[in-house]
Each structure stands twice: as C-alpha cells, then as structure tokens.
Figure 1 (tube, rainbow, N blue to C red):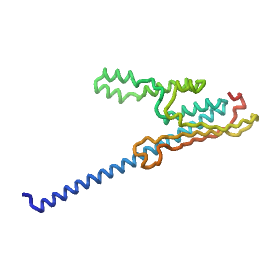
Figure 2 (figure 1 turned 60 degrees about the horizontal axis):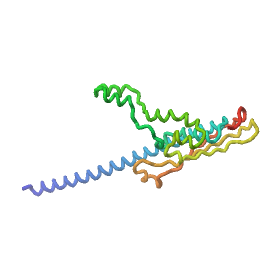
Figure 3 (figure 1 turned 180 degrees about the vertical axis):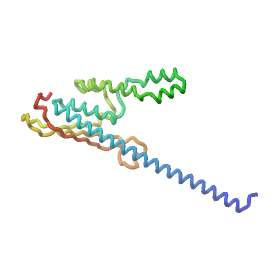
Figure 4 (figure 1 turned 135 degrees about the vertical axis):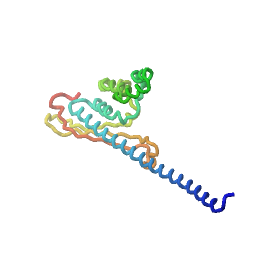
Length: 216
C-alpha cells in the first residue's frame, strides 16, 4: 500500500506533467504562428520588389519603342518567381546527372558529389530556355503555348506614355503593374482577412523613343 502522502505527491506530479504538456503545446503553437507570419510577410515583400523591377523593365521597353504587348511580356517574365507553377508543364522532373550519380556512386561518393557540386535545377533551366522564345512571340495565343504560369492572369500592366509629337518631350512614362497575390502559407487567416492581397509596382522613366525610332 502506498501511503497517503506519497499518493498525494504522485497525483500532484501527474497533474504538473499534464499542465506542462499543455503549456508546451501552446508555446509551440504561438512560436509556429509567429514564424509563419514572418515567412508570409517576407514573401509579400519579395513579391513587391519583383513588381517594382517588372514595372521598371516594362517601362524601359516602352521607352525605347516597343509596343504594350512586348512591355507586358517583359513584365511577366520579371515576376516569374512569384507567378506560381508552370501550366504548360512538359518537363517530368527527370535529372539525368543526379539520377545516374545516385545509381553509380556509393553513399560516401554521392555525399561528396552533393557537397562539392553547384546546385542546379533542370526544371529552372527548362523554363529559362523558353523565355527568349516567349519574348519573341507574336500574339497571346503563341505566347501562352510557350510559357504560361498559373498566376499570370492575376497581373495587370497599365502604362500612360507620352504620345506627344515633340521629339524632345521628356514627359516620363508611368508604368503601373498590379497583382492579386495569393496567400498560401498555413494559418495565413490568423493575420489576414482574405486569401489574396493587392500588390502594386510603379516606375517612371523618360519617354525618348521619338528620338531614334517609331513606336512599333
């Protein structure tokens, strides 16, 4: 028989163990929520920087005489990192170098190969190889069959270039790009009332294409 005093101490310890477990779960949940929020905010910041760069690139395209379709393509290429997955996905993810190495090397050799090699992505190289063909496309139908990302339809490109006949008019081109950015991280509803937020990038650049060529 366990004395009453020992039973009391044991019950108290068991209650403390349960309380500690609950407290640990609450702390872990709060820490996870904080890190998730930081991760989502960092992704939003990167997306805004990409839009600012896209606005600058498309404004430069129009400032040297390219039409709005070409400027739109330049903007979309600039925001590929925040545009979701490739829709016309023809690449199956097979990497012959890594696959052959995995079958022909010992674990030690494979580890040495991984440490001393430069990380590459065959999928990224596949998509990068299509960018020049995409920029050379003549219409939307041809462009969509070369490159088309899931979030490109959420991007809007608007410009207000100076159409003055004065070749020395320095009125700047105002390029504005908006994107409905989807929040995809877990628990994002804890700090956002919606699943999408509106992001905007702007750029002003001198309009000088009249100096050396006609607008195409």
